[in-house]
Length: 573
Image (cartoon, rainbow, N blue to C red; front, side, top):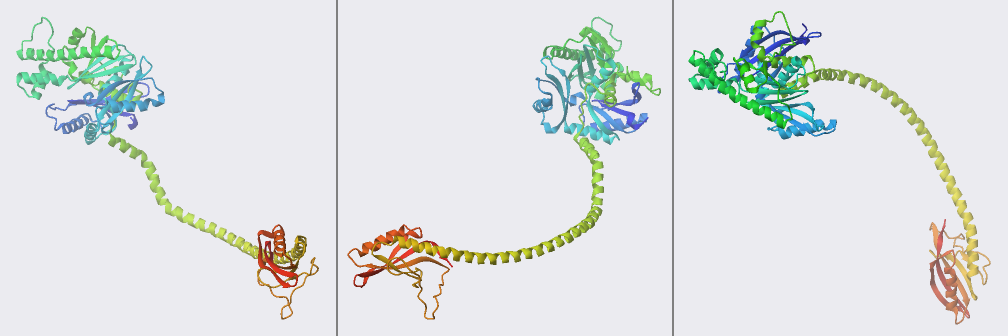
């Protein structure tokens, strides 16, 4: 048998543990290879050493039947798990996980970060919504159980909930039988499973075999272990009505005690049936299936048949499970009634189940995630080792490539530098030529400019006024001379060296206009009239014509004056 085909299922109850070794076959389904069970021997009032007792019980089971340690699927008792059935309104499928997360935070009576929880969709409601079962267990409880399992030599693969595992076993063996009620009587609690159509509803009642044992211990002044032994040796459910009591008074008293506890249990079952019918919209069960360690007390089936008035039988979890030849049939018959959860756990590895929840501890989840990351970590470590070699090879290759690129760039730079020098030389030649062109252009422009200026001045002279000289207004040198009347000729006053005076400014911004006129009472008005004419000239700025020397007599009937006019466009040299 391959290790991958081997299935190890462990059910942890309040007072006992059960284990089954299975083999998943392709044609025959689930195949039982080995099994064992053991009592923990724990007084419910003294659970300080429960973990040590659990470890010892599991180790003894494995050793007695030669079951090798392996990956195991185990279940936690129903009383340790918070179970809530919730109906969701009709919503989009993509929003279902979000709504379930919200419902879990609202319904789980512990901070959500302190529990391990899971859910399962049960089916659709009449209104079109969904019914969901939420299951949650405190992290410290599941971690403690897992620590005990691993201390016993097993490795946790999956964690189921006992009632849900029992339901999966029912579906595997009974199919779609309608209107069934499973009464799983354990040590501490009795779990009820209402099963009809494709839905299930569970409820836990805090009455079980330990309640009977404690009542016997209180009645006879025995210890819990002594009372448990009496229950197993002499216990049965007292029959109702007139019947002959057993000759042993102690046994008769024990049977009455058991009936009292069973009567209390029946009352709770009746209330649960009523709740299921009124609050969950279910139907009354048409038959009852008994399971659990405390269900085999004599006349338990007869008691519930009498009280519930329906068919009562024991659940056989091995109906559709094949048995290996080495499995003792006689031994299996004596304990089959409390192996339903074990079969349901094994089914989780073999096929899809109606309810698939997993309350795997956070430590195992983290370990699995680390295991899944191991190949990636190994690859990363190998990559780290290869990095230096890759860097060396890359550096060498990069150096060669960069050197080739540098040589090519150097050649290009040399070509560009030679071209740059040629361009600079041509630019200088062009600049020199442009300066010469600008000089010639300036001269040509000035040649015509002076002609236009003199023509404009000639037109703006008023009667009895004429210009004597035109000179730069920035310095006193006379550049142009005119005779009386219209301007006839140009002349310059030579310097003492016989050459024209040097003009130091780069441009002439002002012209000094010296003129004369026939003296009369209107001489100042004549000059003002001439100045107004100059202000309208395109060659001078309107506000730039000023009187520099007022009219004054120089000889009989002749006066002189000087105007300083700012050019609109300075004369460049």
